Image (cartoon, helix red, strand yellow):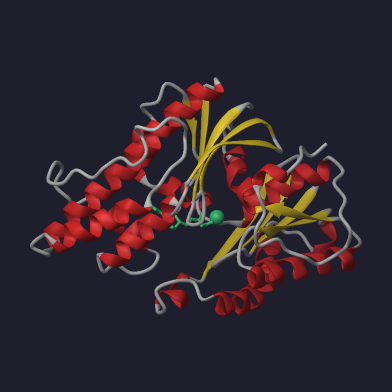
Length: 334
Ligand code: KG4
Ligand code: ZN
């Protein structure tokens, strides 16, 4: 079964084709980052309009990449939430209309399920069950996954998401949007041991996170420093170490609590090198998607949708999106 995947929940348009027998056939991405950078964050209306411009050209490209045409598709998957309502509606409208016109089924995919299943696209995919750490710009979740579609939340952020904390801290240090990768780059020049930031909530039981305090801690440290480029790099490093260490401690606890030996890491912050290196120290097998599939992409949506379509999922041909959508409301595909 060949499934077209469309991702348009935020500031990246991703289109991909996944074949349930042959694997991923093609994927393309257009990032709107340069457009939003001018405003220091995502402008929802601009995002929606740009998705409209990008989806069909990207679709033509992925079809050409794998020598297929529209009639070779057997199903369409699109991100139906969570995300920005206008951006989601763009993908939903295009996906549903294509499926209707081609007489094939379409299925709405949960964006976080897409992230969570992204490591399945790699050469050595994780076996189930596993614990998943989802760290993106909008979510920080630790989830026990006994089977695909059954998601038990072990912990989540009570305030800022990990990526959001990276972005906000980067912004107050004067870095461009989105600051996460730039802050990580800056931290490479930081000197270890100059500052030590707290590891929020590690003394409390459970696997919840809180990252907003670290942002404030960074700000006051910066204000009380000499405000040189070296101070900036030292603060970036101390901040990154604190986030990474906190994620490490909570992952270890979540694995113990759920009695699992496999950890899947997904979402944009999963691209962070320090985090990848630190999690390798866990007494568990750790699975990451390739760097390009840590951040938003169409391949993970095509994959998550293909599993549901293959299991016979059918939905009414209604164009709708769910900007808010708890992961725990999903059911297994069968
Ligand atoms: O999963 P994603 O592409 O979008 C959402 O669904 O939110 O994640 C984007 C987030 C941003 O906050 C970005 O700053 C962060 O992931 N990010 C990073 C790195 N690469 C991306 N944060 C830290 N280190 C990185 N290398
Ligand atoms: Zn995402």
